[in-house]
Image 1 (cartoon, one colour):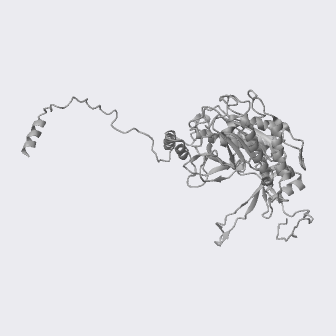
Image 2 (cartoon, helix red, strand yellow; image 1 turned 180 degrees about the horizontal axis):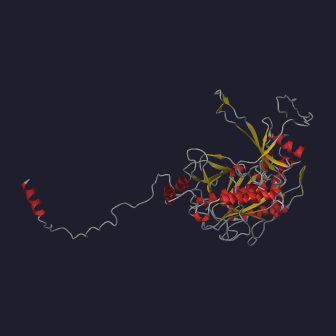
Image 3 (cartoon, chains in turn red, purple; image 1 turned 180 degrees about the vertical axis):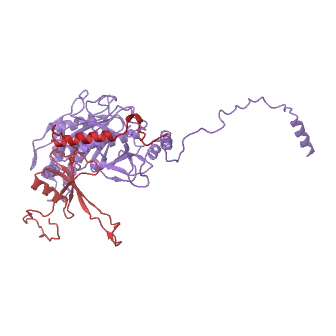
Length: 154
Length: 412
């Protein structure tokens, strides 16, 4: 379970299990492009991980109950060309769909919510906001013109 | 010739021949042009509607049931393959939404209880079958991997069902004319909901979502007379059909294109065209011990429920199609079947009543009927088999199997 090419000792019945402390690859939780069911979480994982690795990773390190894992490899296209007319490959990556156990659900949060900043009365931001608001109102055309620009003349 | 020329001149004078009868003047045509209808081949909604109407008309006017089934399933397209015995999580909710089924825990309200047969005889039959497979018969010491269910529980179930059916023939005359199938095929093809085609030359067109079930119950009992209904056809069930707002791909479920088959276990001409009871065996990959080891204890009942709902829907709907009903010609009487799902030790009982076959978008617009599935939790038939003794035999499970087998229409 390393991100480079490693040869593991062959496992035979009765051998001690392979134990990895501090694995050197990582999982990235991503927002699904297509809506997923409530119990499904989508990750981008290393190309060398398997679904068993994903399950053990989440259960042992993060104590997340995992019911099922499905993986697929997303092929990155090789159509783009650079200034030398050489082909430029977009890297491939592996996607894991993890279904949480014990009835848990997960929804990817909105990372950039629009927030209304309430500025205190008398502060610099408040004066700035009021000034910008008044300038905007001065720049707009007279509503009695009905959307016709002011340079239009008969 | 001069004679014929003279005849023609006299004819042109307008004189009538003596032997003609006065004929009715021909009616003027109501319209000079043929009726104006939508195109048959255009890429438009009206053309699609016209093609659909033509298809429905062909199915309605089919001379026989076989011809009707052939026309119904002649067009092959990619469809979702629904497996009744599946490892997918929470599959029973998805299957309920595909088949418009309400799941009611427990069993349906029982009618008048008939005089029960002697349970001690039947208990001895069951224990004999159990001990034969577990103790008396010499079998391989270790069964092959993923074939443990075929080793002992499968022959036990076959023996149990056949011996109980034979013993109860005196109490239930329907069983004497029934047909016992071993590992029959049950198939059903239907459409539910609509989706937009995303890839291929048909991109952008609205298509119905197609499903196919190919089931292989372990043992099934087919009878020539239909079982009585549990509740009336338009009974309003306390419960809702779960609505799932995701495509079936997320279950996960995969698409394939092959024969659209509708089959109950025998062809249309067979006299035993109604279903009585199915017996299913849980496969090795979905056994109780494996699910407990994978920390999926809540999925044990889900596996039973999904199997019951999918298998029984396919069987009852195929029986309805064998009688000539289909999604545009909805059933006029409810179709009823029963199933027992077991893994050799734990038994779960399911009853299904098919009230509607109209699951397509067009037919489902004003359809308030829902299909109903009753089901119990799985309970053990025995605790353990020690040597030549069966420890902790549960009489209730045997009684329930006997009640299922004694189910018959009121006339008999």
